[in-house]
Amino acid sequence: MPQNQIENLELSRRELLARSGTGFGMLGLASLFSTDEQVSAADEVRPSPSGNALAAKPAHFEPKAKCVVHLFMNGGPSHLDTFDYKPALEKYHGQTVPSGNLRTERQTGGLMKSPFKFSRRGESGNWVSELFEKTGQFVDDMAIVKSMYAEVPNHEPSLMLMNCGSGQLPRPSFGSWVTYGLGTENQNLPAFVAMCPGGYPIVSTRNWRSAFLPGACQGTYINSANQSIDALIENIKNSRLSSTEQRKQLDLVQQMNSEHLKNRNHDPALESRISSFELAYRMQSEASDAFDISREPKYIQDSYGSGIQGKQLLITRRLVERGVRFIQVWSGAGQPWDNHDNIEKNNRKLGKSWGGPIAAFLGDLKQRGLLDSTLVLWGGEFGRTPVAEKPQLNGRDHNHYGFTCWLAGGGVKGGVAHGKTDEFGFRAVEDRVSVHDLHATMLHLLGMDHKKLTYRYAGRDFRLTDVHGELVRPIIS
Image 1 (cartoon, one colour):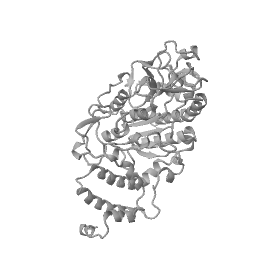
Image 2 (cartoon, helix red, strand yellow):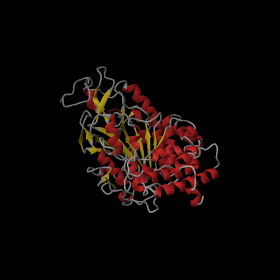
Image 3 (cartoon, one colour):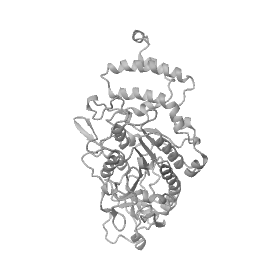
Image 4 (cartoon, one colour):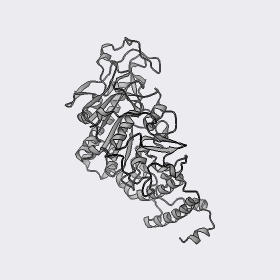
């Protein structure tokens, strides 16, 4: 539409959008890409040559990994029942801690052995619980970090620490930092996807927020409990307009938005909204294909299983193939691994829902030659105590002093068990690894120097690791 016609419109821009608001497929994504905080365009340290915040950008040095898959076991999985075998718990089961040096969040009972059998797996001989018997066949591809530690034994700040590098202050998420630093290889899909079945986890969208980074770097939430494509990705199709008609409508609105942007000194938040409109339009065809696992051969679908976790991981593999940069796969809304009681029953169920699908996912990536370029992280926000929370010895309390995560693919040295907790598994005591160290190491594998990946905001340069972070070199191949 010519400029003079736009200027002579009797309706205001706001009124026009209100009256034609049923038009665009996927406009609901716009709010997910927005941010309430503003920065000057001059503050951005890694601008894209094209001006597109999601355009692919060069790494600081040759990367080993191109994308990240974070398997988030929210709630705090017990390292003592999964990958950190402690014979001393069997010896002292039901007794008080001999040293007495064990501070827990709540009053606890005696020491509690694991109700699950452990065995050595692979050529590395690393210990794996029967909960992850199928996943254990890939133990030689994993670097198991047994000396992780966090700051506090509470879910909210520990989730923020693991996801955003700070448990107290509003900061961009890890996925947003990666997206900001590297962009994405697929401009028709979100660069950062967060799948959590059943609704938001604790602290909801703060887990994948962009904060002061460009709004386009924020994660796009998918409720992976939904079955149909239309429910999985809301408003993906427009029932009233053809693709050609939508394109004309979008061009009109984007032209008006462009004028609106010029009058507001190229406000980054508004730029993010405008770019999200365009992404929403482009997603209509590609998103339908990427999330439609019925297009997979039956034997592939069967290998992942019919459960939600298998479905999430099969979608994840399809997103990895399509160049999505960061994919977070959650256990589910609430705290499914937060087992203060009935740990045997609950963890056995969780192990069954995750173990087979993770094995299928890792095997699928290897078979397709994708594991070498995909960095996979498994873990939660903290671990569990070696003592029982209740007198009946059937559950564990929160423990941030020591816990386990593992990494695979993307330049990780396989078959490694790094660090140790004490004989009871309470506290990391050897080669301790902070969350900041983990983030610094993962950024390194992506070709990014965590000290140089910065963003100037409010008069200072911020980074994911703040003033912390050392590379965990023994797990880097």
